[in-house]
Image 1 (tube, rainbow, N blue to C red):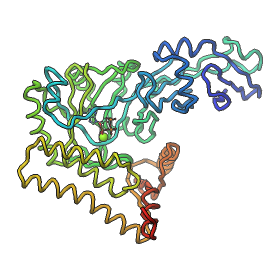
Image 2: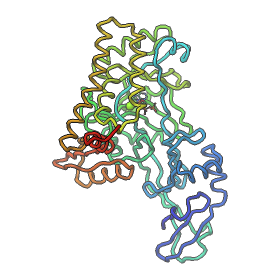
Image 3: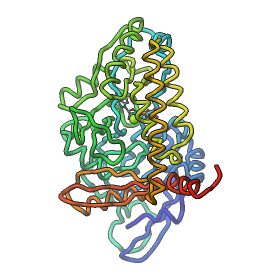
Image 4: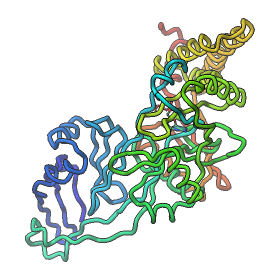
Length: 430
Ligand code: ATP
Ligand code: MG
């Protein structure tokens, strides 16, 4: 039996079609939305319905389970929140946005009040790992009669499934497989099915954000938060670290817990140090995790992102460039640099803008498109193809360029950059 969600995109009416008897019947799950979902999510049913109608909330199937995905923030639910309508409702909340501070002083003192834990901010992609129930509702027998009665449904129990969701809330097949290879998750989730592991997938061999870390190499995972499923409540820094230790899961680096008065100086010292190792930055968290964290990044990270984005200038919004330049301005101000240091910072920034742009213009002049290749390790060609299909479904313009001996080369095509530069080269006006 399938639920034909295309027939009706509301939640009060599911259309069940029973294939064996070729009979379709509409089942009204009375008060389903009103009572259960509203209670679990804390969101008014009218608001949910409206969000679905506008396309901000998507209703589809994931692993055979009817699923709601919040593509935009809805009420208190973060974008990326997923609700699995299995025999029990499972809610995996979206990972909250982390605000940035441009200056360390006096923001840290004002914001954190007493003390602050300083963690490394790893540059990879955000992953939420959870164990979910995938039990489904099935029709009993196939007599084709009286389908709208509840007695005719039975629940088919399926085992728990461990899945890895990327930021938007989709289960990523690549990440799901790798997470289970890299981490020992079974024990953790069998003890704590109500928790979500939030972390960063990092390394050179991934399809989303590639950065080399000496301690990671091709692919690795670092946990930065453990959160409760429905409430999104994070564990305190201490509880999180103890739990990760107990289950032998790898945490992000903790530089220390500082009194707010000394924190700005310490962070300034640490950011210079990790910046010179080409590492991204820091996330500052209140030890209790009752205040939302703040992020702060190194000059080298700003440069690297600007450089990367100017390879594909028309595929990135203007805000992307502006915000990184602003970060540099405020950091230069706060670090009170010597004229030599300032000269260096300015030169680096200028080079990161002009040089990649020059490269890409020349490249496109040669008749080549703007592309970005990444290598991932997969076991079979089918796996590589499945992953590219997954990216297509997300609307990402990609192709599988090559598969050989467990290495797949995934090519992402930056169409706006290719088309616009081509146009200007041919005399098009800006
Ligand atoms: P945001 O997450 O604030 O919406 P964004 O998507 O642009 O912004 P970043 O600027 O990279 O992301 O910063 C936040 C991200 O940093 C988190 O979503 C998380 O994936 C990542 N991150 C890396 N290390 C940590 C850490 N120690 N604690 C929290 N997040 C971390
Ligand atoms: Mg990031």
